[in-house]
Amino acid sequence: MTALVFHSDFDDADAWEAALKAQLPELDFRRGGDPTGVVAALVWKPPAGFFAPYRDLKLVINLGAGVDSLVRREDLPALPLSRLNDTGMVQLMASYVTHAVTHYARDFHLMERNRLKRGWEYIHPRALSSHRVSVMGLGELGGAAAAALAGMGYDVTGWARSAKNIPGVRCLWGADGFAQALRDADTMVLMLPLTPDTTGVIDAAALSSMKPGANLINVGRSGLVVAEALIAALRDGRIAEATLDVFDEEPLPASHPFWGMENVRITPHIASITVPEGAAPDVAESIRRVLRGEAPLHQVDPARGY
Ligand code: GLV
Image (cartoon, rainbow, N blue to C red):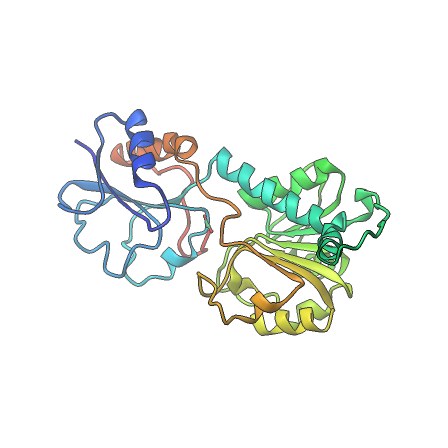
């Protein structure tokens, strides 16, 4: 019998068990207990030392898209590591990003503030094609979000470390491309993986190279941005508005300055989550492959970090 261990403080273990058993009826789905015979670990931020008792492990699957919290652990076993990637997750992310961009491009943030003071102010809508969006990071989630924005009519630039081709999206790469994507954006969307190369890339210099009054949306990782620099830029209006879904400390402490800033929208890390029914077929297939001695689906290179 194939055994899997599950650990997450956020995901629904019952839903995962049902979804995985529909794919692998013989699966022994464990939430801890006897480590013997456990060949796969399906985990989101397991506690330190979690992996040590699992001597039969052949595969670690990150219960999410970003593997940064796993790859920087000292106790990560040297085994194939994969991440989740499913249509449900891609759609949730695209819905969040298109909503957040549209909030600013259609001036809903201004109308929300007017609403609070019973103010009726006609704000003439502008063509979406006049709003320039830069999507930083064109992986599975970023690429789909950029395509969705382009499909809605926004003027979309995408940046990735290497050249990409996404219909309707001006794809840039490399250091020059990064600078141009920053410079051009009315709204910038951060969808990069957090790696040593991307940590703190959005610092004071990067923010001041953006158009005065640009907006920033961060659905990647908080470590991409130097928080003090963002707070300063939001206070002096160089960055007009921010929508943030990811934070250094989650839950975001009640004393954090972001809570008190009218121009910051905060969501509790919900931009995208994995829908078990959608992801289970790939998880099951990865387990089958690893048991046959093959590579799993959606394998991550721990050294590269994505
Ligand atoms: C969530 O942040 C994820 O990486 O899936």
